[in-house]
Image 1 (cartoon, rainbow, N blue to C red):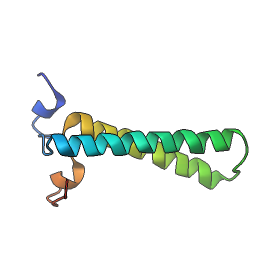
Image 2 (image 1 turned 30 degrees about the vertical axis):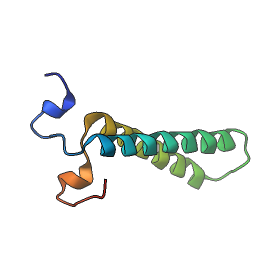
Image 3 (image 1 turned 90 degrees about the vertical axis):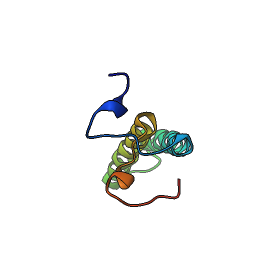
Length: 84
């Protein structure tokens, strides 16, 4: 196998434009996570809600970057049409 897209259960379903859009979004979310993490570390924002938000942002970032690298979109895999 040369790429993750060759696995039967995850066929490539986005083109280069979709991959680029997802990668850009993933990187932006990663920078947002760094900012939120820094604010938490400096005690500028204090609440357990912020930790939960940080976890959600990190997961979203990682999953979006995974989608871009794999060429696979979970929304498209469920049968929905996306603009990109």
